[in-house]
Amino acid sequence: MTVGHYGQPSFCVNDLMLEAKKIILGVTGSIAAYKAAFLVRLLVKAGAEVRVLMTPAAAQFISPLTLSTLSKNQVHTAVSAEDSWNNHVEMGLWADAMVIAPVTATTLAKMANGICDNIIVATYLSARCPVFFAPAMDLDMWQHPATRENVRRLQTYGNHLIPVEHGELASGLVGNGRMAEPETIVHHLDQFFQASTLLAGKKVLITAGPTFEPIDPVRFVGNRSSGRMGIALAEQAKARGAEVVLILGPTHLRPSSPGIQTISVQTATEMAAAAKQHFPKSAVAILAAAVADYRPGEVAKEKIKKKKDTFTLELIKNPDIAATLGQQKKENQLLIGFALETQEEETNAKGKMVKKNFDFIVLNSLRDEGAGFNLLTNKISIIHRDNKIKKYELKSKEAVAGDILDEIEQLLSKH
Ligand code: PMT
Image 1: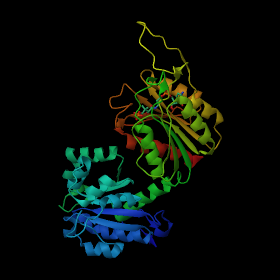
Image 2: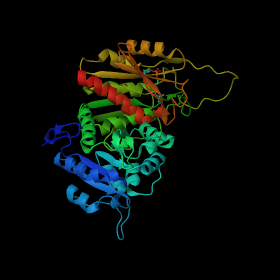
Image 3: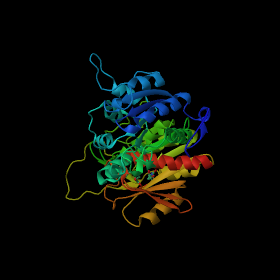
């Protein structure tokens, strides 16, 4: 079946990458809710399994019976019914993608602020899959700074905006604010899954966290890395279908997705050994760990006693994991490095990229507020071998991980 109207993308539903994909569709209370029926129909025709959630307001615009008939699944409008609990956690984990279309200004604000008073926001907060949102509202509401800020926030959390369209609105005004047509929404989903397949089944090796280099049984030389950036990369790569091996230095954080093979290490030497073992079969390696460049030459067997006023520690060089993998790298492998800098950032990062044979380097600078160690956010630039630089705004580490993997998928598509 080929679909497409009013200048919307036209495609044959059978050619889409939506076969057997599990999609949650959240419908909120907007006049555009009627388009949810067409959206469900298209998704089901493309082979997707669709479960619909509605707010009570949405149920005033379109009947749950219509959407349950089209989706062939029960529609939920509340977290709990009279005698049962609709398990939003299970649904959030079940889905390959969640789409909220239409999303009103109210639900946008709730999602942006974690106000969990309906089944759609509860499922959204529990979802580990990519989330797409297609707003619908009047043009002034769409342009209001509060809405702009909520949209921006949702994007920095890594959610995908399906932009509004220009046209006549329910108020009779003409402008931006119409929900994207169902064909456009399906096209966005399809594009996402097409791109995701580039990493599907590929082995991705990620280093993350600090290394602790022992001085004696109680002390070590270490750094402030939490592992959060590398864990976010592991989660994102897993969500895109990769087989992920995460080599994680000492941190209390752990990935939450099942199926990420996590190898816990303490020292640079241990991290190097695990990386060397897993790199040959990896299509991509991303080195986000903050590896100690030096370690104490001798590790005392017993706790060192306080004696003199000064204490000298002799440090010896650690293996450079990145440089070693860079030398071993084959034609069909990608090696991505990080650079954490405090001065002459771009020059230093470019130098590291060349020296360690990275395909591109992710630069983060401690001079940028909100970037670097032990924070929930990061601000990066991606520098390529041809010196092209892409600069990104401050985002959650999850969203930054998404940007890095998008860039990797672009390189894979040319490989
Ligand atoms: O863990 P978080 O708290 O979330 O913080 C994230 C981060 C700031 C640690 C991360 O974004 C980051 O910048 N990681 C790299 C930090 C670093 O040590 O950069 P570097 O410029 O010293 O090293 C350059 C590259 O070589 C890095 O890819 C590093 O992993 C690698 N390297 C360095 C030394 C070494 N002996 N072996 C290596 O593999």
